Amino acid sequence: MKFYIKKFVLEKEQTDCIIIGIFESHDLLGSADHLNKCSNNYIGNLIKSGDIAGKIGETLLLYNVPNIVSKRILLVGCGKINSLNRFYLRKIVKSAMQVINKNSIKNIIFSIGEIGTKEFSTYWFFRIIIRSIKEFLYDFCLINNIFKNSINLNSIFFNLDNLQDFDIANISLKHALAIDDGIIASRQLSNLPPNVCNPLYLSLQAKKLSEKYKDNINFSLIDIKKMNSLGMNAYVAVSQGSKNKPYMSILKYFGNKKNNKVIVLIGKGLTFDSGGISIKPAKNMHEMKYDMCGASAVYGTLIAAAKLNLPLTIIGVLAGCENMVGGNSFRPGDVLTTMSGKTVEVLNTDAEGRLVLCDVLKYVERFSPHFVIDIATLTGACVVALGNNVSGLFSNNEDLFRELKKASEQTDDKIWRLPLFKEYEKELHSNIADLSNIGTGKAGAITAAYFLSKFSKKYNWAHLDIAGTAWSSNPKKGATGRPVELLSQFLLNQSEYNF
Ligand code: BES
Ligand code: MN
Ligand code: ZN
Image (cartoon, rainbow, N blue to C red; front, side, top):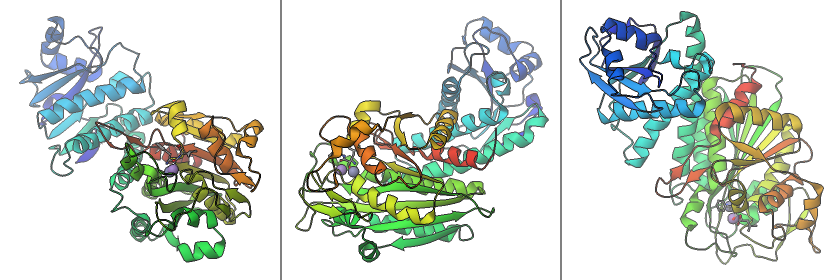
């Protein structure tokens, strides 16, 4: 399936379906007005007779419209004039796609440019529409469990009236497709079962990526031997109970500009988290295959970065590990000496993400990074605090916070900042080590982040807790690909694309 942007003489176009927008006010604008005139007020009369009111997402499929060569015209309700927003736009596109898909329509022309001219720049109008189409197609395949040959679509054209916008519309298309590729790659990796996607598998995917983009991406691997010699004892301790050894993959992406500030992205990659000796309840334990969604988000973001050819230096770290129960497992009560030299008393082996990440946060100091962002399905408490639509954000730097907030608002990949006040420090007090690995009870998302902040003092750092947003549970089980769009947009903004 391919996307094209073109200026059409709509009434003469031999296609399967033209999609146009209808408003509640019954005013016909732009291409809707044009096709209505060509068809001697055919569309206007239908609206007048009440066949479609124009409410957001309402649809009416027309065949054999007089004087129109296209087989069909799909009217889609766009609500009130000048009241379009991102949410409505997605709904409009989704409704249209449902009709297209249900009727096995192969070639379509979206001609809805006029509905958003006031509310959106051309760039964001296209970005949102294309992402929504892609999202619909992926969800459809996921729900129906068929990834091939399910969608009949051949081509999706966009009618662009104003040829001045042609370049920007194509840039938007390119960005949307690159980011979507990253999102899909991330989702596919996350959705794999944990007996397939183990730490070694994760590292092999990272390696493959570097082979695919060999001019831009370089791969290196830290295995358990190297971890031991580096003193990454907390990371190794978490992996101890599993026969699957830990692997930390490092993907270095070099854009075409020299002397760049280094941006490090660290993904928690617990390919399965049983909780270890502090074992989790059985009920939803299978969902802990998604405990590597941070790593898969980094993976997907690097794909987007490579496809976008961003002029940046990005280091992605996939911290692969498995937290299992066994005779070799680390124990509650163990005291671990982390790579930083700080000692940690393990009071709960299920608070393993921070143990893995604290050593990675120390490790990445060697890159003298400008920004470090870790992405982790870190705490159930974050889900309690923010729910399933908003990721938790923590940061020790206002610039980095602002940049992430901006990217979040642009993409609707929502985040909300939680505090790291000094008052939380005592929660992590231990009388036999420098730190305990859990807090004393409340504010679990914050105490986990506070723990990480102890290991990330040497650079500008942010932590995204994606425990609530990385995947959906029943009935539409599956990874969401979040926050790949947020991170990709953050990187695009760092590249000084300004739209
Ligand atoms: N991976 C989990 C966090 C998690 C739990 C994400 C449920 C999504 C849904 C993490 O390793 C964990 O187990 N955290 C514990 C920490 C606690 C022991 C302090 C938690 O949140 O219960
Ligand atoms: Mn855990
Ligand atoms: Zn975990």
